[in-house]
Image: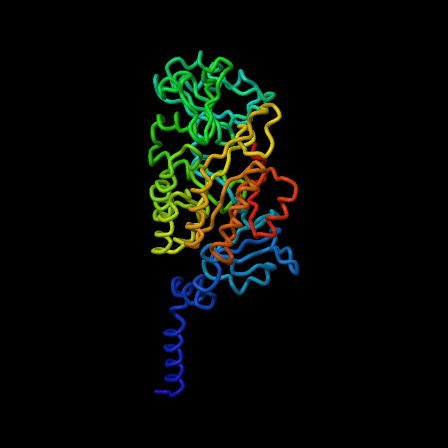
Length: 442
């Protein structure tokens, strides 16, 4: 046989064996993908054509960023990210939209807010008749005898006059009603609710609370701070499903405002149960975390009365329970709020000369719980709005620090709204965090 024919045939067989698989589409795609970085090491998403604020003064803006598993790999120009683009990498064209880091809200009542979103909405209402109309509408859609719950009202919007049970009694003859003020430190009950709770002209003010009365000594329907428990104890417990839905509802709303992390101080107000925060921790947050339903990160604070329970959880599991849940510290109250005339001041209220506000907790007890919490390494946050309340807490924090020794403890005062002359300097001198909200706590 001619040697050249043999050689030619051998070459033809070799080439057919080697190159034939490349004409197979599956093989070709696998071979091509092997030449491109895998998303295991590259990005699963590249965001491009945006205005991305980096927070870096040397490079304040970029137009693209590469992301893998929800984490930013690199920020820069689109061309600088191409080595991170792999087989399966998706791209999102922002078309010039602005990107900023997610906002952190340092003080929210997340589940309470979510529950309120599904109840009677009276936030922003500036007329008495509109409140009556909205309550009446809710009654028409409710079963006889069921509670009508809502809130968010602000009497300053209609001139300052405080509402009374008589405003809504006519439209609520068979349903108990409870409407909280926007600050959560005062609520309005109708006469049906007052009767159900046994609140009469003979009912005494509880410690840390006030039952508002008419000139004749009859309850007006308004209860302040610890007095709210007289009504709250009669309201049926919110179901687990309702609380879960409320958390998801509020979380979704937070995301629409660019808020991706919150410090949640819980469903904890003067007069409410300290167990609510713990029930929500297990029933809502741990459920959402284990089932992959968390939408925003949360830093949780618990009632200071339960400091030892929180210390136990942290001792066993640590502070960071997951990428979504962090155990922050404990929360307490020193006074009420300005709009409820229960914030504690050195001087009396102008329109109520015998009223200096409310001290809603016994300070020796608060001092002892703060010492114990601090010794356990827990961050302490205490609500104080009036100037006297703020001064009392600053004094107490100073004493605790002296007793327990120097460390980076970062005590917080929530709101720190009204300060006496010279008080502001004490925050810096003592290293106290003034946790001031962006809206006025009125």
